[in-house]
Length: 109
Image 1 (tube, helix red, strand yellow):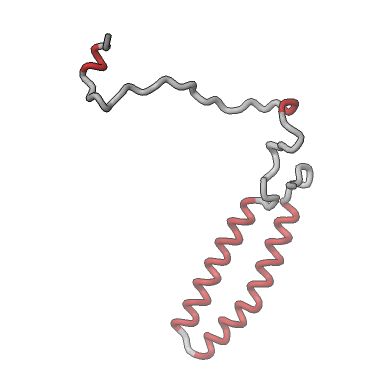
Image 2: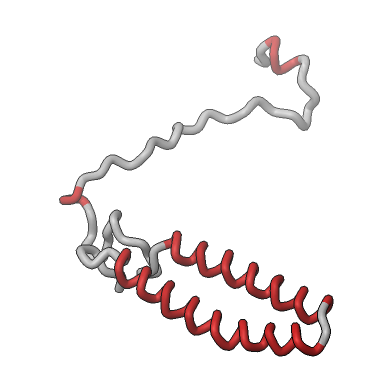
């Protein structure tokens, strides 16, 4: 026998099924497998360093692009000099920051 609520519904529409509500996992270190580690970052690189890399790379690309589009020969040469100096500097600074901020207690695989 249908309930009064089900009579008013269209035949295609059904009431929501009852599911168990998911709960956040409780941290039990003894329950972790030999390869599981909740503290490490899966790729081994601190995620804020990845964000800095993307942000600085996009800003540098926009700056160099605008220098090429809006300038004369001198600004185009300066854009190439800027790229020749800025890219290695950006890479070395962010590599140093990643090495410093990397989690050495819980290294990635």
